[in-house]
Image (cartoon, rainbow, N blue to C red; front, side, top):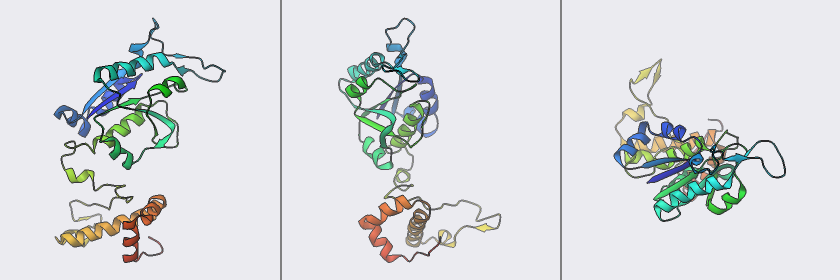
Length: 246
């Protein structure tokens, strides 16, 4: 899978993602990451990419021309127009479901804004998806792009060494992940739950399922409600007795 990031700070994106699991996946050829500096496409002799907004107001706005030319360079090389994602608080909220959807694409372009945003005309021309990673404001789109690329990459075959780990984590089927333990069996007087030491795989699976359900109910009422409304959640709730307080 190929990721293209249109940004004013390409080194920030490259340094942040060329390590750990994502970095190894890039080296192995499972992923490709290219950050394009929007300033390189400015026609201003000082590589200026921003100007004052019409109608007045605080701050500066990124101009349409360098953004468009950066996008056009990528799509021209590819010979097609992949989905272009603009990172903005005005977009739909990013989720595991959307990560899975985007992981089916061969290429993705991420557009990172700065200052007070980007000229609306170029957004209308090139953007296919507007996405937010939460209800708060950041200084630019680079961190949200990195968050999305990390989450999407985990869904790409070959990126994770253990294929199962990508499908048994938090938010799968609207449930949080169950608690996990490693050696030693006892630490600071706290013991690993006995069921995990039993070697009985069916009981372990059932215990983990119950823990995921109880943890979601206690910590994330929004996810719990979505789970309850699903067929799977309805059946599970009928077969489990929950205490009033967890």
